[in-house]
Structure formats: structure tokens, C-alpha cells
Length: 306
Image 1 (cartoon, rainbow, N blue to C red):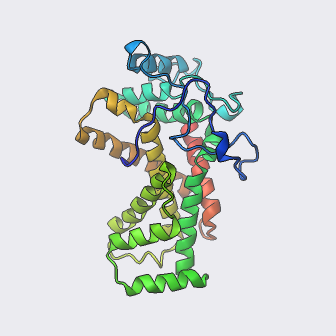
Image 2 (cartoon, rainbow, N blue to C red; image 1 turned 90 degrees about the horizontal axis):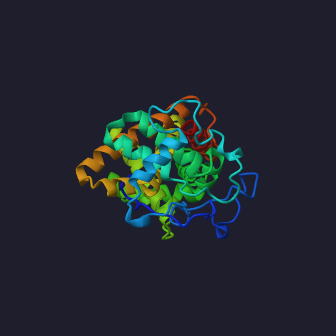
């Protein structure tokens, strides 16, 4: 987290997903396309009348019923926003509520405000958990590819992977260099913002393994360890998404670098905790990395939407 640039998005009435990215073959409907944060229009018109938008964001948060202290019965972004009739066009100021709640969190509102920000980001900002999972399908696909590569390296089921592993082992690389080699092999650099975010998420995920167990052999991981890597990648990239969509809040409040990192670390712990809870409820004894990655991402976003 911290590798991504916040985005103001497009003008009001922008589609959730740009047409050029095509349909998601796993989504079941053409409406569930994928969009990168740099391509999405968030419908938030910034700086109207010279106003930075902070006050309006807070008002929108309260109006949506996501703000702390709001009654449960008040109008709010629907939990099942996929069926809320948004269609392919995003509502106006779709991230305003999420940014308002993020401002409350940064002002000392605690995890309740952070949860409200995540809920509004998924439901109103990204169109609900199902659409959000489709928008972020590159995340689950990349996490599944990494998990599948690590499983193949362990099991020796793919001759090409076996040859690659033997070559890399012979080079006796440091942990950091080995991480870069693995990420480069599994997730080539295409130059897009989404792919850069995913590669950073994957590198950080493997680094987390080494932090926990410095002498670990990443080419001989257990099913549970591979599942954890998949979860780490998804958690890290979800945090990157929060940065991309809600990061303007840090900029508006003019926090220094240290303060921003403290909050980012707390957000990361929050997201990791939710992802870990999801994984703990899944059976990883018969590992299917692509399927597991899709389930972890979709289930995590569903939790955030509730």
C-alpha cells in the first residue's frame, strides 16, 4: 500500500466500467465489466465553486446513512447494490460518501468509520460486491496465477516451471531478488496502473512470508501457505484500491508522510483481518488457486458491503 496514486475519476454520469475493457467471462452478465481505477469515472465533481469537497462529502455520507451515529433505518447505500438498479452508469458523486467516512476515520472515528467507508466504496462507489469483484477480476486472476505457479513449483507438475525453478535456485538469489524474479515470471509488467498495483501487491505478499519465516522455501509451500499468499495479494491490492479511490482524503487533510503511513498500516491490518477470516472458513486441502482467489475476493467484498 502506498504505491498507488489517488484518482478524481471522471465526470458525473460516467459508466462503472469503460466499454473498451470488455465483458467479464466469469461474471455471467455483460454489465459486470472490469475497470482500472484510472479509467473509472467516479462521478465526483471536485472543486465546484472553489470548495474542496470535504463538507459535501461529509454531508453525502450522512445522507447515505453510512456516517457514524446514523440510524440503521435511515436511507443508505443498499447492501445488495448489484440489484439496486444502478445499471451500467454510476450514480453522481459515487465515492463522496466513502470519502466523507474516510475523513471521519482520519479524524479519530475509529474502525466504525473505516467500515462505513469500505461499505460505501463497495456499494455505491463500485456498484456492489458482485460488480466490484468483476471490476477487480485482474486481482483475483493474478493472485490465482501466483498461487498456481507456487503449487506447480512445489509439485513439479509443469516441466517449464521445474526448469525455471532449477535455474533460479542455482543463482542463489537473496530473498528480495527471488521475490522480484517470481513476480516478474508470473505477472509480467504491462505498464498499466492496475498491473503495477497487482505486481506490488504480489511482491509485498511474498515479502510477508519471509518476514514471518525468514528461512522459508517459497518453492515448497503447504496448501495453507499458498492460500495465505493468495489472501495477502488480494488484501494488498484491495488496500491499493482504497488508496486509489479514497486517497484524496489524505491530501485534503494535509497529513504528513508519517501520519499517512500510520493510517495506511491500520487500514491494511483491517483488510488483512477480514481476508484472513474469509480464508479460515474455506477448505484448502484440495487446492484450486484460481477458484480460491475468486472466492476470497468476492467473499471479502461481500463482507465489506454489509
